[in-house]
Length: 328
Ligand SMILES: [Zn+2]
Image 1 (cartoon, rainbow, N blue to C red):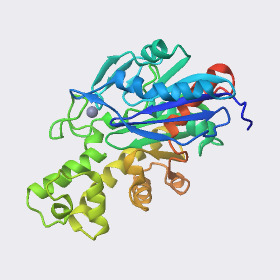
Image 2: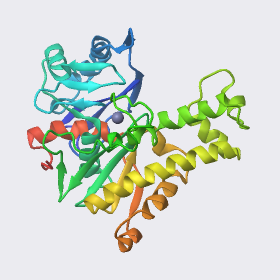
Image 3: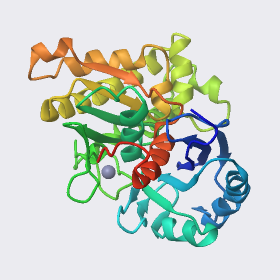
């Protein structure tokens, strides 16, 4: 690396916070990653507010030595690859928000945009645990549940770039819980942080014997609290997490059965829960594999970069300039 390497500004816009950093064409982080709360107005994430936050960073990037290639954006929800419009992102309450064109107009720089899961795959494939692997899946387990694929040495997007929405595979459309997508009984209503928080709250509301009530005091139960309670030996919390592990394991085994992959890289808030949480999901998923022999080779690991989607957003910029090998 030299201080003249091309670099880009990369931004990962999540449901409640954004992460921003400068990355060079070799995948080196040039300064720290800043994590900033997204400003909301009447329950809707403020794009103006995000642009205001970006001002300082763009100024700093412009003053830096080396070729400033532009801005890479990652957003949760579904981002249209052609237009850079966020078609739907329930957490931000964005429906048809012209993300890329707004950023381009404000800063007059090249801007490239895609969905976070897709960019996480790109980041891992370019500079992370997926860099020497021909086939792997990325699974995000946080508030929701989603996946993206790297197959035969290339990013696989499907017909519209949305492949991997397995969190919205139906498990029980009759008795299931309502889902953020407007339907009922999707997998993510069983296997996500939101599902765990909801079940924890229900256990407290029904008066089950659990330390969750003490941990929460008067706050709503969160997924984090349920993990905390389990560490304290709480049986109710353990049961709820086992339930989550079961559904997550079944869901992931389905990805493996369909795609015949050995490596699952997991990101999202829940992937950071407890040291053995991913091991539990791994052994659960192995119970449901058609190819029993493959079970020995399956690995479920944590995201290998500080924020794979943000790194992928940078890689997406470099790909357009031929700075890194094209992967999709
Ligand atoms: Zn759904």
